[in-house]
Amino acid sequence: MRILAVDYGDARTGLASCDVYESIASPVGTIFEWNRDKLVEKIRKKTEELGTELIVVGLPINMDGTKGERAEKCCELSELLKEATGIDTVMWDERVTTVQAIGILNESNVRGKRRKEVIDTVAATLILEGYLDYRKKTGK
View 1 (tube, rainbow, N blue to C red):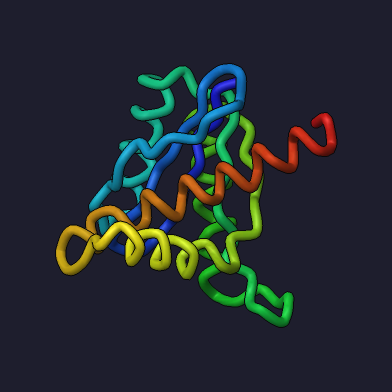
View 2 (cartoon, helix red, strand yellow):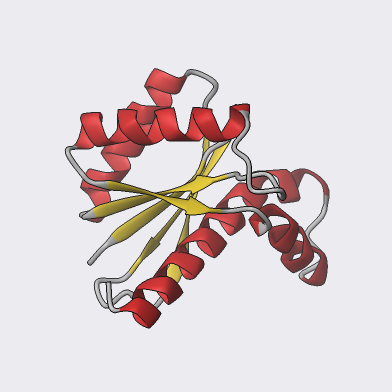
């Protein structure tokens, strides 16, 4: 199944996708868009281009397990994507993906402007890897 992961941000939204065998999560890119309706349309086009069958949206749960304003925005985006694409969406806990992405970029010596351009895509890839691992372990 082709799955698209979304790391939603107010200005930058990272995307990652997997192969049909769900074995490799790969970065797709970053969408630079402030307008949520335009963002949804850009993601919809990307789902068509990739043949996406499921969308995983990162859910930024607070470390204490509560959901804040950012999590609510992500849930709203998930619903908008489902309506716009007709594709099921799943929310996935992304608590530490940005921290992990920073670590990966530090190890790769990616800094400055280039880091801003790719950090959300790296985070989306980590979200998708976590979700794919879950599917393998649970058989879902």
